[in-house]
Length: 198
Image 1 (cartoon, rainbow, N blue to C red):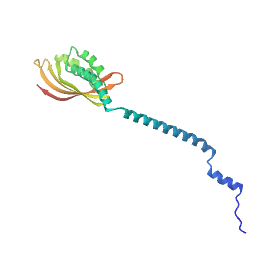
Image 2 (cartoon, rainbow, N blue to C red):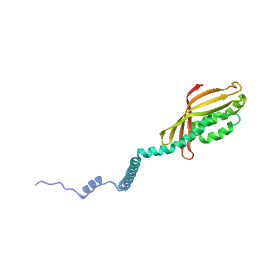
Image 3 (cartoon, rainbow, N blue to C red):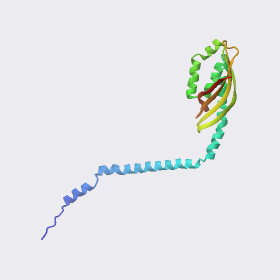
Image 4 (cartoon, rainbow, N blue to C red):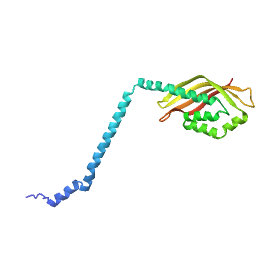
């Protein structure tokens, strides 16, 4: 007669203990899985919302938005360029009070540095002045909904004690403007692309 091995209750208890996770581990596995599920659903919801937003925005709507912004960019670029090419030692403080609120970032820092380094005194010492006008532009384009570029052609005549007859220059200027959350469009960068004496 062949004897079949018997399994005692103690052996069964040992095997069952190996297959069943300890009570402590079970306590945090369920909440962790629930939290992962909540995070996954939140991410999926966010993705769907952003995708629907992108789908809902048509090229026509983007064009309409930028068209509405163009007059504001045009106005600020015109004002800043006009202020920059018309000045003398008697109105430099007034010019600064007008330019600084229309500027931000790099351009504002450069302009304020120029004023603080004695531009007014230098103009007064040499009786320097400048008169200019915009010949063409500003031509406005957009790099993004919150960044615009304005190109202008200007003429400027400068005079001083050393040059009472004056010298006239034509400039192509580029102003980069950004749409600030609290103050609308402001000039962030000023560049002279070309200069020619006329």
